[in-house]
Image (cartoon, rainbow, N blue to C red; front, side):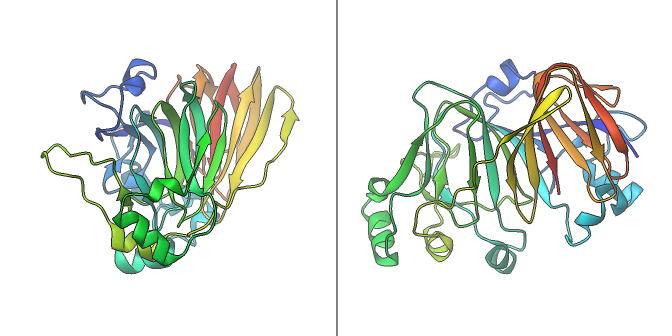
Length: 314
């Protein structure tokens, strides 16, 4: 039973900005801090234990040391750690992309597929993102529009506002637009198929790689399947709202006025991503932008102090 903060891994993708460093206190020397991988056991970027006797271990090393029981019985069905949680600062538009489902990803890429959820932490006025298609199209039209650069004529652009939630099942065409800061909860995968990238070049001066043929295999050529709207639930000292629940994760946004008594039972660990405030989590001090891990079986603990946080379980 343990509660500890995590230090994230960082990514400096070309579309990133500096808000994660400037506003969220991320200690990173990159010119652009596009993503911070707040809860990650992925080989491409692992989060690290920041507190206690296990400080300095990667989260995977911590799990290996203490046993898979720290994740809870609901994780037994997963061969690997099931989820990845990020903060994403889109200073510029991300590529138009799609992620495969488990069957395709495990067969072709050797890792999980990627169903994900976005919570809009903040955004510029007038910001938009791409979310599925306006209407169903055929495979032939999809291929033709990719070839002649008219794909964006049939994609669904959605204005976004702070607090919006988007559930993105594997196979859904999508792109985060410029001026949006997002908390992303996703399957533990780094497989992305780019379809359109605005003609940009990478650090090597060459156009970034596209994955058109794989995208044709996995893209659902229809409007996005949205998660049903859920009510705000009121509790003593805080409110909670279910943002999404699926086979891989269940996630809530918590608005805490004074304190929230939460529980990490034997079924699942808890992850808390602090978006506002400087609360304590079971006595562990956390600040805006930090991620706190609570092992399964810890039992009841208190999130104390006015704050906003994303709570994720499996």
